[in-house]
Length: 292
Ligand SMILES: O=C(O)CCC(=O)C(=O)O
Ligand SMILES: [Fe+2]
Image (cartoon, rainbow, N blue to C red):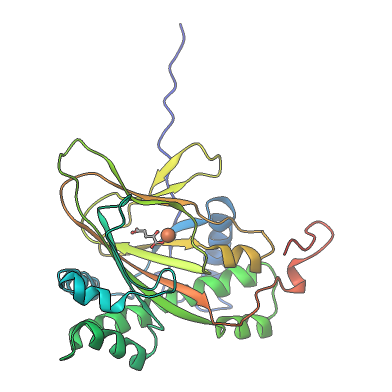
């Protein structure tokens, strides 16, 4: 008799960043650092348990993004940008469910207020505050992850410090309308890799959506971060270059099922203009010749 084997669904590695002792040099740090390296080598992605972003802040972000997407199209068009991934994007014929608002330099109060004032000339403090506070808190996870992955390859402290100061934050808020029939499945965002260093994402209470391709290129892994305590961390193409190809760049897409609207928010660490990305010497050797 032939036994039918069922392959269990693949899952993203889950890494716990909630230890109060998570500081460089501690046993906890070294252990999480090892997990981060394995996850970025194998999946280009992981789910991070991270408790420094209060649930109320996530809710505030989704509320203000909903408010922004509800503005008339002419108003949203005031923040359309020539630069890809920034400003307002929507009404893409092939992705009718999708809209995004990307705030560049989201760590900078003046830039955020400037963006807010284009949408609401009378100002909207809740919008600016939610964007800045989310950026500030999620940045800590971005910086920790980048320090860990660089340390794990023996890159010098000096280089790491300089590197961490060489990026800025792009904060993006995404909206994906639900599909009309419960049984339908539609593409929310096409298959892609992110170009930046790291992307850190969270979503509202709509389960499913984000999918990450397994390294075998055959299977899709459903990323299902918890609504109140975890984030999905994805390695981008710039990190792959910086680490001489030693980490994988997570290939991902968004699929929509269900009639409810999905909101997601993400922090993207992006090299500042004119900053040349190259792999530091520590990561280049005979076994790993310079690729970039
Ligand atoms: O909405 C998501 O979860 C994914 C968004 C994404 O992949 C992106 O903005 O690059
Ligand atoms: Fe992406």
